[in-house]
Image (cartoon, rainbow, N blue to C red; front, side):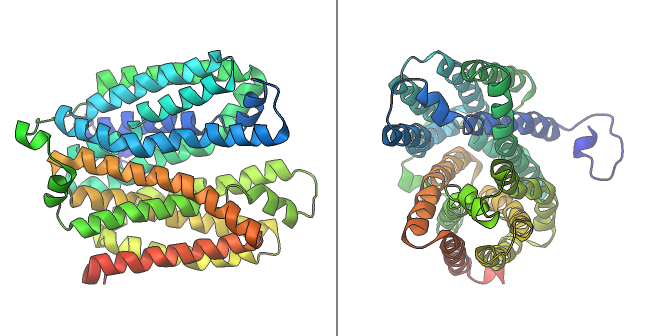
Length: 409
């Protein structure tokens, strides 16, 4: 398939790891869409499920949104432990089939508590993306892991980017409920594609190793401090990316002096980092394979710090978009780099557990970011959110250098 041929040369037969990458990219793309597409109309859908005051609507909408990530942070290590016993493909099938039915059922709810319950179940059945990363990490030759994980990382990013646009369009053309049915159907297709086309050469761990405690798993890690540093890095990256989510539309409105078209412009500004990420991630993943993933990640921290600060002082929407594009490039380096470092420093027998722990920290970052942005903007101003985010990235950089020592020099 030309998608994976970097030199533009034709191939007679795709290698197994490339086929896995192709299928799982599509699956993670749909998973990204499924997680993000209801955002444009979530509060509107909640509003159809009861007679709520403005404060009640805000509360229930926030609870509905955050409940998935809370459960995801708690349940991911459990699924990771099972993945190391039974294989990552089994977990991929479990996640895609479970989410297909849960998302479809959201179109049938009659009150907000049923919707919140299903959002909690969505967190229980999540894990398609983390297990796809783990499978690619174990099935891909180590010398190509940075490239493969860079490609794979663009799947959920692009899905999250296009999800709100797709969800908004489907809800406008059909209805809120039909949108959930369509999403469930797409996830069902992902299940069958994964079942028939994804291949894993999984060797079950020994029975005594399959029940390793968390302490014993840590004991098997190469440089455990660095691995846990990657977990914290993941959390801070996600928190940084999501810190401006609560205020981006308001900041755009302020820069446009309450002009027309704020919603459309805010959507574009929100999407720009995802576009840059998709363009940069595969190339930066390859660069990491060539010069060292740690070096690429270290430079990406500095790059992000430099471009977060001027966003607090931009005079126009144009410059905000320019700096957001550069932030997307830094994300394209950081996110795949973390996955690559984890794959290289984790024995195959506990890869599923480690990647599930990383997903838990990612979910925590998704929760912390909006809370941080809201708190800072409430205490100070919108501009202060970008300064606080830059400080957060600086802390991340210092922690990374401390944990990795001379390896990033």
